[in-house]
Length: 260
Length: 270
Ligand SMILES: Nc1ncnc2c1ncn2[C@@H]1O[C@H](COP(=O)(O)OP(=O)(O)O)[C@@H](O)[C@H]1O
Ligand SMILES: [Mg+2]
Image (cartoon, rainbow over all chains, first blue to last red; front, side):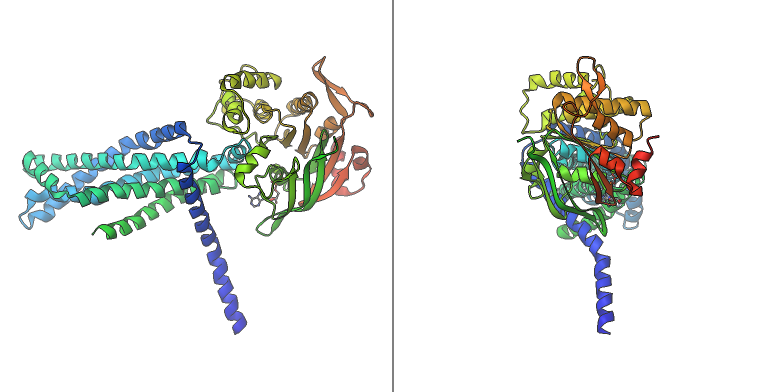
């Protein structure tokens, strides 16, 4: 009775203990990584190196995804708009969906697939081969040397990459509008431009900045927790990608709710 | 003065979930002595060294290094203590993204409590690599070296600051017998030339036997037997079993033991 109720309750607590401890560890890591942004020593070389691998390295895939997103949006929307006789507004719809939603989310998902997992596997291999311990033994804080530069590099690179994806997407939409929907170039770009307000631009820039935190910190978190040889690294890599993807969607809903 | 303990464990317990990796372990290492720590796989040897370095905090008990209690220090203050301890990790743990030269230079460039003028960093690195007989590998990456050479490079990285305490985690694991012998010879050379207190974790009794009974001859550059008396370095053996210290004493007492777990180590010699 009382005892069994109590037993169930502690069973539930045990079940929640692990995720709760993990969440606590994640916030601790976040706090330390942020504190190091303003604390010496700063590893400028590492930031530049990470900006190159994370940012420049993602450029091609981001351009592709942005382009096809724009093309598909233009095709889909023109169909829907034609039933109201409003095909002329295709540029406007493409611009708004891309800048507010698709550009940030698709770019972030690409980065989650490419970089959250990349960071997790890199730090994970360092963890299981004791390189992280060696770093501490040789006088460096792994959070300062590894996590903070990756966080800063991702936060610096994701917003401009998103802007590039937006523009390439608009360009893709324009190709469809011009060649397939019979809209003039002028009409497409004018409606696209006029559709965008300051709030849309703000939403389109704040989202990638927030997503960057999720991508970099989740990647580092799973990497630094890896244990148990190469198998553990594989698990950390997969977990980081899945967790970053889910977190991006959750954050997207929360941020979108703020702006609508 | 020379009997001042450099490293002291007082009832140190380290737990992982329900497993006790170290159970109420106590010992002390005095300046100039060598300690050989024997134990089966999983007996807590690595955890012992990492606890000595402050990489793992004890769940209970106290750890002192150079007279400072390190269990109580925050990470930032630990860096200074660690700068006086060199550690060879089990699989070398060289940074794979850095060259050998950059690996050895890492501590000189990053450890704040070591003030090495930038112009002296690379000459010092070259000198240390020469000491471990790895001259000419500066530009190579760890993946381009053999297991034995990686071990040497990792010893160079640990020893470049000439720390008074050196910790070696299974320095011969995974090496063929000849390479293993040269690594132990290097370890003895480091001990006798730099006069550092040395803790060696191993499951090979031959390693302990060499460390206890041989010394480095600087004139000929090789090992020679160190006979009882003046020349013999003080060597203490410790045997760990499932996190417990089951033996502590010199080689003669170790070989007189009748405990099957302990005799297993020196019986494997022949
Ligand atoms: N990170 C960890 N998490 C859980 N258990 C661990 C961890 N590290 C070591 N252990 C356990 O502690 C014990 C001692 O490990 P270790 O010191 O690595 O052994 P060895 O003597 O082979 O070096 C083992 O039983 C091991 O399973
Ligand atoms: Mg070990």
